[in-house]
Image (cartoon, rainbow, N blue to C red; front, side, top):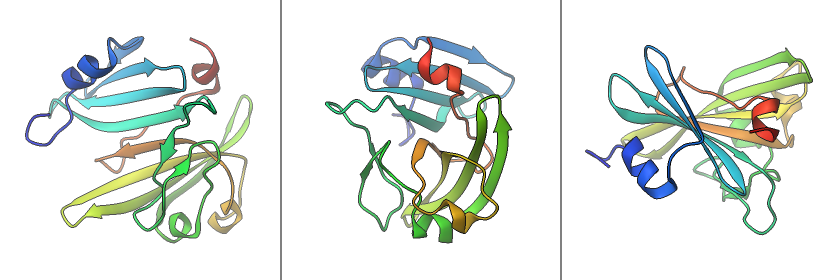
Length: 163
């Protein structure tokens, strides 16, 4: 960590080399695969620090992935975690879109964990919903935590099950 920021060098030191990486003008994306999860790390070219993390759980019962939904709620196991009243109340993005395999919905919320640090959380759920209230208790399949409101990413169906 440099000045309290997560560096890709530290992640590579801890996790080993990523299985995939790609680069755009503004970002570098690194994909790490573990026995129980896939992790995408988005690095800002401008700030040279990690600005977003996306986690997809492979639903490994022996090594579950804990997921913090909000500051007010306890951790839940990703794959069993559901859209809650707090997420619905604090949402700023609600978008359903069609994929080759059906509809998916993204819900973005702001969570304040410390007085000086605000993070945006994006949750991916399956299905099409007419309004945010219909998503209550729907299972969360992926979570992206980001420093920057409009920078988030999710794994596609093919990324989640194929290398």
